[in-house]
Image (cartoon, rainbow, N blue to C red):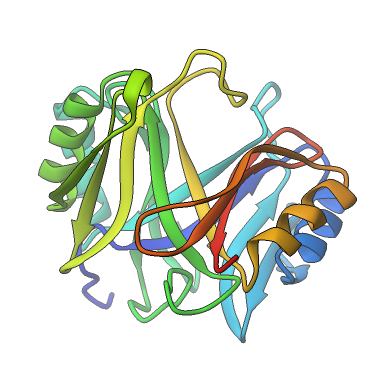
Length: 255
């Protein structure tokens, strides 16, 4: 296998009960091209932007799974990373398993309960995460019950570095983290009234070319605008949305 850098965002995966509805929604809102992956016995669909594979949409074979977006991060050795998760108080939910033509993966949760994936890719040159391209992963926000403990966990696992902390008033602080010299996300305390899975979770941000127009597309396609649009430091604008099946996601771009 190609040696992958540790802790790079590499894939975004939507678990949903209605793949047809999800496909129509995200194609309309983000502009993805979505097609079946051709996996025998599984309805797994691939979303692409600008010729790059960005995300997967699938129906779980396990009853009772919530509708949510899961983020994957690279590791040079999936098995070693999965063991590190459990040693640090996290949970191993699935794997490690091999995916032919893709790599080796595991589904885990941090000690606070946020689920994420670890991928040891065969090809370390994927472009699902690209902050300069629309339709790609752009930012990664952890909503958690304990931001300080969560950062200690992820920094030990992936080598992420602490960045600027911004005062959010009654909501606490918003703590940026960086990877390979660039800010790639933030962590904050989960608000009790926030829509979502009801447990700590990762919120993916996808790039768009205009936030106001994208927010209008969310509601036009049957989703909900949960927060925004509003500006953030650095000159960008964001909107947090919920798709018709209930999955939380966010968009970032110019006004």
